[in-house]
Image (cartoon, rainbow, N blue to C red; front, side, top):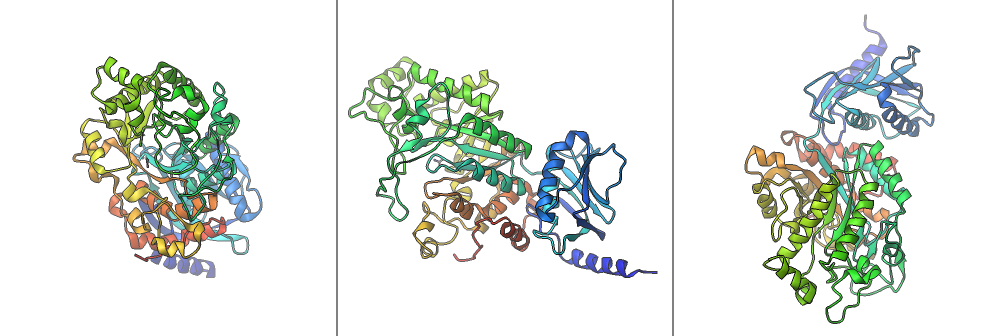
Amino acid sequence: MKTIASLLIAGSLATSAAEPPALIPQPVSVQPGEGSFKFSAGTGIRHDRALESEAKLLASDLAKLTDSQPKTVVKELTNALPSEILLDFSEKTDLPPSGYELKVQPNGVVIRGKDAAGVFLGTRTLLQLLPAKLAEGSAAIPAVTITDYPRFAWRGMMLDVGRHFHPVPDIKRFIDWMAFHKLNSFHWHLTEDQGWRIEIKKYPKLTEVGAFRESSPPYGNRNSDDGVRYGGFYTQEQLKDVVAYAAARHITVVPEIEMPGHAAAAIAAYPELGNTDIPGYSPKVMTRWGVHPYIFSPKEETFTFLEDVLSEVCDLFPSKYIHIGGDEAPKDQWKQSKFAQEVIKREGLKNEEELQSWFIRRIGRFLESKNRNLIGWDEIQEGGLPKTATMMVWRDAKWAKHALSLGNNVVMATTSHTYLDYYQNPAATELAKGVEYEAIGGHLPLEKVYSYNPTFVAENPQQEKQILGTQAQLWSEYFKDMKKVEYHAFPRIAALAEVAWTPLALKNFDGFSKRLEGIMQHYEAGNLHYCKPSTEK
Ligand code: ACM
């Protein structure tokens, strides 16, 4: 005989069959089951001993819903919990790295990961299965079986803190939202013409001098100056804290130290590292946006400095990849510098582009000696691409094709689909809201981000494998605070996350848009300053 409870459960099954759960990124497989699991403050977490960190993180996330800390116990303990979520490793040998299985049944929730990253990512899915806010202290999660794993290993977000500095609590909050979307690579753009943001013990002037500028362009007039001294930097203790915070969430922090260009702040701190033999040499920390002429001189002193800096960077950041920038390095100063021209002659190089390539190759060899891989923007191929370098493609797909044909790995980060500093609605619509809505330019709507397929440049399966993944960029010229970063990042991060995670065959913008409505409830609950999607062209 059917009880009222089972009839109610059958009712919820009908609903769940009609409406797939609002998950982003869309998992590989979602099979609705029968009944539902009742989550409440009494729900505890049982876990493999090796998953204590993942269990504690899930517990603190669930505590935000229930206002009480859930019990966590290791799986060997036999004491029963009123209801439980089990975190364990999967026995499935064919589950790819970072994959997981999540089963919600009336008698409990089980998340089994291929590895700890998979378990953690499964817990992020569970948070999306739960409502953003609990009604009356509990929630029924419809039964479901999910099998899931990522399309790409590199699912990234780059944040520029050179143009505007964003404090550690903001960075941590940002990392949490990255994890919510299953992104796993936080590319931290730490040095710029307008500010050096990373403490280097051996070179204190980098932050004493290089972390501060005398003025910035105000919103509304990029060709003027507010006359207000501006700056900030992260201490090594803070950097280690962020790296550990991210690592606990299975996010790698990839630091970027720009060279040979975008180096005005470093050269202002240590003028001897620039092209001192050119007319009118007078470096300072830049106060306007755009590309600036000050680039490092190719002298031994510079390499000693850069190797010292990178040694401290390697000590702080365990990332396999170290980003050395390489973009937008105007060659005018090298053309004018007698010394740079002598290096070109001495090394048998054809021109300044080959000098840049020689410069980058030297740095690459140093990073190899530290057991790290060099990654740089696509200009690193000008004058010849180092064999072991990974190229971050930002300008044109032709550079990706070039690198792939040479056998190099690439990360797809093209302006066309991944530059989230561009307007998401037409500029006039945004600027009508106020001058503080100013962006650098461009127009990159949500649907266009969603339409990105990072492997479109690959000509064969081998080249597809060389595409490590994709990432979105948040250049900070027009982001004076984190609210503005969030406004530009969300919900376009959700689209990027699905590009990076979900199998191509399962992508569907209408389905994504529907699921996004559910995800935006989490944004609301988390006070995220996101931009409401619009279809305005
Ligand atoms: C870049 O946008 N300069 C990489």
